[in-house]
Image (cartoon, rainbow, N blue to C red):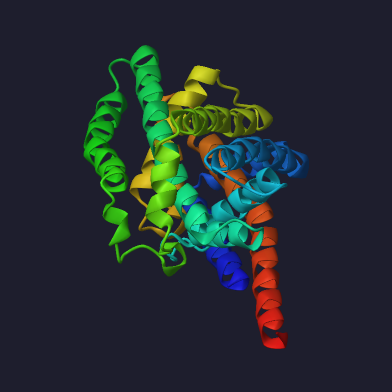
Length: 316
């Protein structure tokens, strides 16, 4: 699986490189990547760990009861969730299932692990909607005549029924009979766990605020990358750019890893902000490199844990 993911990423980069070479624009991307260098890629990768940490702590905040070390388990689990979703995105909810199983391996009851994962996903999506609203506001302030703000607002309005439906399904207990849920989440006490979490407004608020902080912190990745390649932007411009990029990738979830969608989004949205296409494409490639650096070790660890569990079951 890891090899297939690496080949998929390499194919996407090769395709983008070929297209840009044919259109005569690759000469600008190369110097931008050289300007960032390996140290730039390392800096972008290390910066990405900060929002990952916040997301892991948000997940931990939802656990009613947890053994010692649960916070670290949630942070590592979040790293695994993101890695699976980015590099093995053809697996529906694969990252969430892998993360929940990791929590179970660390002593958390299956129903509680599944419930916390469901509610955490909801809190993250709601936080993204608020983050997207801030991005639309940034577009209105920076470029009031640009259509991006209009389409961003339309997209947020269209997502509202989905958010309300997700919350309603949990509050009404519909997940007790939802056969579409992964088998790992269909525990007898799943609904009881969800009810316990929703009965604690403080936990919900804490998870939401941590996810919101993570979304705003995540824009620093593009802000840093653009500064490293010699095209610095303001924080408001980075917010306008990244909020729409995240929204586009979320909407295009059926496209594995958002291949091509992310790159095209960076080029088009960057142009609306006055950024050269070569610079924004270089940012996208840096982020793809970061996905590989953070994702492959997580997938290797996941496979090792799976084999270890199989060996333990065989020797029992």
